[in-house]
Amino acid sequence: MHVVCPHCHATNRVPQERLAEGPNCGQCHQPLFDGHPVALDEAAFRRHIASSELPVVVDFWAPWCGPCRVMAPEFEKAAGLLEPAYRLAKVNTEEAQHLAHRFNIRSIPTMAIFRGGQEVARQSGAMGSAQIAAWVKANA
Image (cartoon, rainbow, N blue to C red; front, side):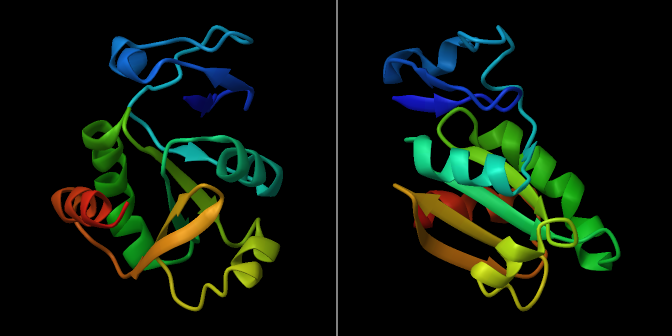
């Protein structure tokens, strides 16, 4: 499988059966999975969505948003529950306004699942980690 590094954004080839073994990036040698969502700017977003064969779950959020701040630790916990089968990522809509506009993000927090470069599911509103994990597994 092609997996994009959360640190240097290099694309790595990892056999699917070895994903759970804690593989490291071939370029920067950092872990490909660390149980935390990866913060993406516009360039990194394009790289992860286009190059990763893992479903990518993106939390579109903003620092001023109360429900976003409530959901942030739950999304963090969900990353620990869902990796390495899924990549969880966060996009700050204040810093990546073009992405928010491109994907027609009208309310935050909004989560979207991308697979094969395409959006396959979307959910708005804050959720707990168990709800996030169940939603991702049901829709990815």
